[in-house]
Picture (cartoon, rainbow, N blue to C red):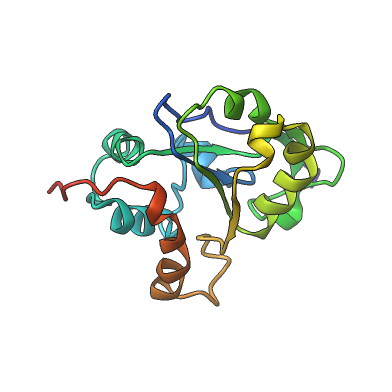
Length: 178
């Protein structure tokens, strides 16, 4: 079995973004579905729905819209890499091509912080993106949050939620939509 070249998903960010949520690279389920955090056991949507006050069972386009209404944008640090499987540990070191995050970040005047979903995303951000940021963006807080991936089974949903609440100052609570 050889390592496959995988390409990520497009950014889901609007001009009013106050917090940019960055993963490392979408897993196979997400790439096949062309949806962020599509694996049924990933806790991203339940966590963000709780923080943002929207229904995590909504269809994907409505979840994305609700996330953006809360002031959150969504993308990945890595735009392309070689990888076998879905795990970040299977990414071939040196094959990573970062997304153009410095340009995106420079164009977000409301941005108050950046949050990395997991240690791999945080390490990739520090390695590929942070050195290229403008002076203003260098001063933005960068949170390394525990991964919502099902591979991070040591973190229960309540424990994840407790850590991810660090985003609340940057989020606008929405009315729960049923």
